[in-house]
Image (cartoon, rainbow, N blue to C red):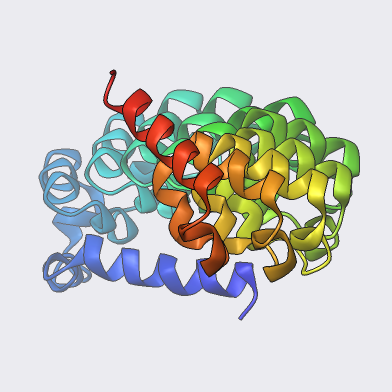
Amino acid sequence: MTHRMEAKSRKAEDEVTACGDGMSEAASFEDEDQLQNDKEEALRAVQKNGYALGFVSRQLQNDREVVLAAVQQNGLALEKASDALRNDKEVVLAAVKRSPLSLEFASQEMQNERDLVVVASLKDGRALQFASEELRRNSELLIDLGARHAECLKWAAQELMYSKRFWVQMVKRDGRALRYAPSVFHKDRDVAIFAMRKYGLMLSCLSEELRDDERVVKAAVAQQGAALQFASLRLRRTKEIVMEAVLQNAASLRYAAPEYRTDPEAMAAHGFSEDRAKGR
């Protein structure tokens, strides 16, 4: 399933949850002229169920007070607002605060508003797919969002997704972002080293070749000794690597080749690391 299909499926689930039993209540108004044209009745209805906005007149779908009330109850009601109000920043902000995926129904101009996109994406990373192409290819914005909500990285523009420079900068901020990089960068030594220096356990994401690379693995275990468990068998038998891991985290000795569990130097490093952790 593609990311977009996955997002659409999850969005549908969100709509059902948000709507609940209230949808039948909204539907019951469909033929009532009073709801269609009476602002006070419309306000009462959308305050109970934002989807009732779909059953009022076009004039009321263009009424700022009614639409604000609707999107504050359910942001996805933005879909039923007039074009003018889907281009109103305050209305769109209220909608995305309530339901981040409502960014889909905002005007193109609003989808290019950086602050609106940030609010929506930090609440739900999937919202970024509805941002403008211009924002999705803004490396500064994507690095900032990715460091705060890594799921956003799924929706970066293609030119960023396959940019080595972007991924180097991204993993320098947060090594865990490597899990969202295309597989080609799981084989890239430069990207790997920068990622390991920030979050060693991402060694698990790397290619077999890089998990057998001494420089890459040393960077990983120096940051998190437990990363030793993801190293190749050859490196789990390499004394320099094992000692680096044990000195960082005494418990990582369990991931070394069996012979190190009785090795005097490894045991000494284990004791030193435990004492340091206990503040002795």
